[in-house]
Structure formats: C-alpha cells, structure tokens
Length: 249
View 1 (cartoon, helix red, strand yellow):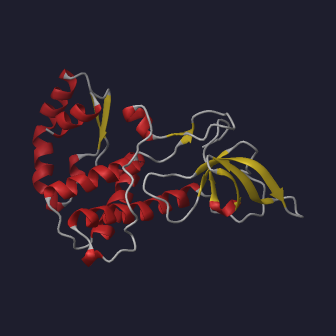
View 2 (tube, helix red, strand yellow):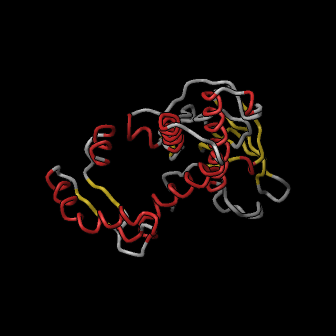
C-alpha cells in the first residue's frame, strides 16, 4: 500500500533503494518480520511493475547515506518542534506534507549560467517540474502558543521547523574554513544562497555575485550581490555558493 501511494502521488519509479529489514529497531519488530518473510513477494510485485528494487546490505546504514542524512535531519527537527503537542491524524499528515515541501524546495544547482537568472534547480523540479511554493501566512514564530487556534499552532510548528532546518542546510553548504586562503573562492556571476534571518518558509534568498572587495592581503571578504530585489552587500560568511560546473564535488 505504501508503494501504491507513492506511485499514485509521484508516478512509477524505475528504481527503488531501501534499507534492509534488519535495520529496524526492536520496537518495529513486527515490520521487520513482515519484510523478512515477504521480501520475495515485494520484489516480485516490483518486477511486475517494471521497477528495480535494491536493498542495501544488512548493518550498513552508511550505504544509504544520501537519503539517511535527510531523514535523520527531518526527524531530529520534527521531534523538537512538536515536543508534547497532541495532533490529530489530519494535522500530522498536513505537517508532514509541508515538511516534505520544505525539504524538496532546497536549492541544489543554478538552472543556467546567465547572470540575470536567479532560479536554482531543486528536487521539486524533478517531482512537479517547477519549484515548490507555499501559501503566504503571517509570522507566528513569536506568538504566544496558548492564544493561537489549532490551525495557527500547526502553522507555527511548520515555521519553527523551517527556521531550524534551513539554518542547518545553509551551515552544511558553508565552508568550515577561515578566510585566509583563496581556495574555492567566489567569482563574478556565481549563484549564492544568502543567509538571512526571519525568512518565510520555502523562500530561499538567492543572488549572483556582482562585485568582490579584496582586502590588503588580496582575499575578498565582502561582496555585492544582485538579487530580484536589487543589489545588496554582504560578508562572504553569510554567502553559500551553489555548486558550479567545474566543481570537483
């Protein structure tokens, strides 16, 4: 049923990667036993649908590092923003769908090399053919929870998740080095993700480097950035360059 829901929402995939049943903890023993004794029927169903089903080796979660790190990050922040909140099934389904949209809105790569193009490639482009969007809502992050209605509390949870997760994602993009060398330096026209506070969910501040300001040592620490709202000046510590064609990563 999970596979059928996935296909109904996203279309039939050509290949599915899954962790091994033995990776489930004791609290999920029932699910683990089901996968253990029904792995062949699952694979047979996948073959009938024209899907290649790949299980990673047992006791090797690092084989699924690409998706495991995303799941870990989402679960980590969801637990902390939800706390002891009591949500109905409809509310938690809505929250998870909105969290999914946040994860799939992250910028991955510039769509073009044009200095006037500020649109990045995101997972949403592979799913729906365009960036993920969200309905505009008032900022409820600083509101008193007891004065909010249930719908507003749910929106407050989403906004708090966005705050936590996008800061972590930007931190991963930033280089963890002091600005004493010219390695991986920015160039004019590079697309960057701008680290700003109090940004609405699914709104990534992106721009192109217009000018660099080198210091007396020849190393640039400040740049002018062209954005859809005009030109702004930011320190390089607040800028996260997206991968380029000649990037080795």
